[in-house]
View 1 (cartoon, rainbow, N blue to C red):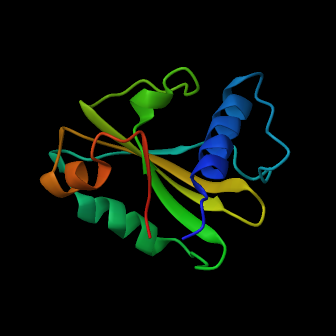
View 2 (cartoon, helix red, strand yellow):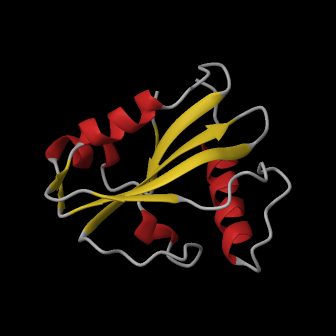
Length: 128
């Protein structure tokens, strides 16, 4: 597997810095991304919610890399005030354009065991 973690993390950081530093977008991002979507779930945030969101997206296996991150770890870069105790940042990184093409912050009252198992205390996890 090729090492895309650093370019992905760099793109995530560039994305958020661009969004919240004078509302200027990094050159690598498409202009149609104006906001990160937000969604709150009553009750437990389940891994099936994460998988369900990615299944709704049009992912190109050769270009798009889905990832999950903890928004609290990017607090200095995000203009995000949590409304629930748990939150996840879901995103799609396009390797060809080196950009985040879609992002969602999803919140819940707690996180299920499968989600915790996948994240394993990592700030960012690339899904395959």
